[in-house]
Amino acid sequence: MSKITKILSYVFFLMLVSGMVGCKSDPEPKSEPKPEKEQVVTQKKTEDQVRAEKLFGEVMKARKEALSVHADKAYPNEFKKADSSFISARAVYSNNDLEWAKSLEKAVYDNQPAENTDFALVAEKLQKALLQYKTLTNRVHIADAKSDIDEHDLSAYDAETYKKAEALLPKIAQNYNTDTQKAYDLSVEVLGYYEKVRNAGYEFLMGDAKKKAEAARKRCDAIKASISMERPYNKAVLTYRSAGIAVRNKKFKKAYTGYIKSADDFDKIYEIVKAKREAALEAMEKAKERQTASSELAKDADAEAPLPETVEGFSDEPIDPEQLKAADEKTVKEIAPQKSKDSAETPAVTSEPDNKKEAQNDAQAAEKEGEKE
Image 1: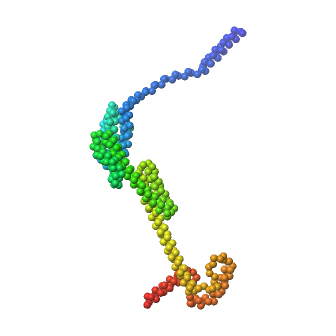
Image 2: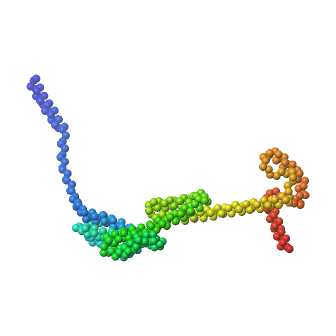
Image 3: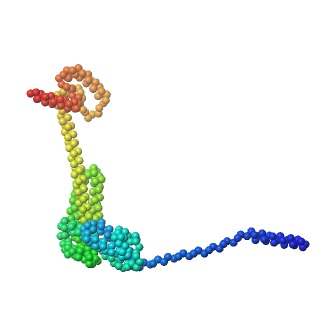
């Protein structure tokens, strides 16, 4: 290879290398490191705080239940004291935010607790309010059970238990402000005694109520009331069956009231169906009387103007249409010559309605003659 050729080859190689370097892409810029997220440190709730926040919900539920049985009206002063206990707890929780504290319908999550809140004290006050509301609810139920027992003379069915309830009843009010736990425990015990007495009484009365319902249902069945008044009858049956379920669940008052109601419903259905049946029978009897009277008129008319002997009467034998047509034509020919003569003496009787009309005309004419005389 000549020297010139080597030089040219070297130049060409340099040009090729420089072109390849020029085509190479620019290096990507290095990305800046992302700042680390700040970790939010949440303070762990104490055991007292968790308990207090749970009690908030329980107290609100107990208060709502007490209001549903009108404890605020039955025991207004005691209910205000329970509200005061609740407000006091909320005030401590919110660092004396009295506006929020007195808004008893607002839940605990509507407001954040104040710093350094004494959750143990909050829980203590909430527990007191909770027991006070529950005690008042029980007192309403106690008053209802006692009234029911006294009204229906049920105390004799468990006299010993009734005496226990009567002895403990005053102690509930005595401990309401000083020892709320004791007052609540007493209310549970006394309510249990009264419920036991009431159940014993209604268990006895329930037997007679069931017999009464069964007898009323049988009366309905005897006149097919289940057909003529299907929906009311089925409703009464459902009430009767519900009472049976209450018996199996030892809910004897509910069973008693169910049997009494079904008996009353069956009695009402029976009276309605009975009245309809009597009205229908009366209408049928009147129709029968009208039919008899019409037949008598027809007989009288036949006696006064009998049909010719050649005219056939009613027969149970099959009718031949051709014979009937021939007989009709023959009868017309025989009667036609005498029509004018007979009509002058006796009016023709063609049907029962005409007989009725003539009888009415005769009666009116007789009345007019009587007036003239």
